[in-house]
Image (cartoon, rainbow, N blue to C red):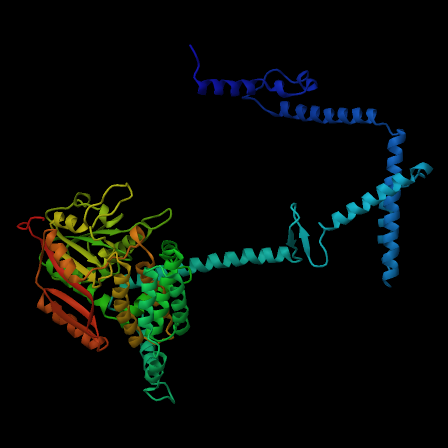
Length: 635
């Protein structure tokens, strides 16, 4: 029966192990034991084997001695020539050093150097070997010259095996130790920052709105803002006059012309306009200058063709700022800008009313993030009359890069579980680390006895126009709006970013994004001081990163696809959802809150059952509630 190739290879390998004498010299094969004791002690075999190896080396040395005896005249003559050359070179070097330097070397050093060079039984060379001596001397000196190149010189340089120079550091060990200690300190610093960020999240989760952590910071912020408006010894209108002088150059027009040049592939004209824009823009200037700096960076990245690389490297979590600093910046933004707090409060109040009188509540949250929204709702449910309902939360968010794609979801679930346990609310959490297109209604274990509520706060801004994308399994994903309709929720809370820069045409997309970001930068410049670190961090890591993706990326690399609330209204109706009317009590509560706590230019209005949030008349965000309509068929 013929053997398989794999069994033949194994058999040959085993045979070679069983026959160790095949590759050994003849002197070894005569003395080795023919069998190996695999299960016994190996000491009796190893020690004699080493002894035989040493004896074999002695035999080789003896053979060499017999081949080249000490009384060989040629060998003796060559040894004498090299010994004399070394002696002459050393003595001349010592004499030159003595003549050129008044300081004498210690006698012990001289004697040692001389004794190592000159042998005790130096013999005179033959008279007819002077030519050979000169040749050997020249060759030796040339070899020393070549060897000196590889020795450390006065400049502290040495050469590697390829002749390239490397810098020698006298305190290399000390700097290496300092480098290791600095790395250890950096690692310890990162761990401490992450621990501080987790502690801040835990406090935000447990305290909620009852005990604002940033109350003192917000007082300092308001005081700094008042100082920025009217600094001491400076008239109130000085800042406005300076801004008008700086805006003598129309940066908006220059940006649009530069975008047109990029769209036409006119690289020379685009480069010239970019240079002029960069000259008049600044990341720490007024709103227009910051906007121009941000959009100029996006245009430059698009010209370089590195949009996707720049967007990915600019980070899901930028290395320049720790998690704690980013959380603090986000809290500053929430405290100074009403958009996110209004959407969270609207969502919690709508869900609380939907769960009134019910014993079970199931929340499906698209875009869980840190899950800070739900601590307030859990606190409300714990305080309502009677027993709190059984709450089941299913958090859906995109997987994170690395070995733990569900790390953020797991941490959010841990905090929410601890918060619910402290409040006495029965709570279950399930996290799904997947794209929203990959989640279907059958994956959620929906219970008919539960009140099902679906929430999405700006998470669907990454959906394409068709609503389908390729999932990880190279299969077409489902439209999340259609999947929500199949879930048959009692309430679907949908908050959207009201913008229209999702078109494939670059010039049109650039103009829409420019108008939208102009309002955002103007809002930041009005409510926050220009030198505020949290503002700089938010503009760099949130606004600028989003703008670069919109401007410099195309195709699948462009992940930002916002639409207007009217476009979302038509799409939701096509998917089989029915819009619910706004609750008058909720709307009035939010209007009073914004009027009482935020800047006067924030405006809350209504249109077609949407709650609109605007800055100086420009609608930036909108939110509404929906439910499944069984009477409407999908078109």
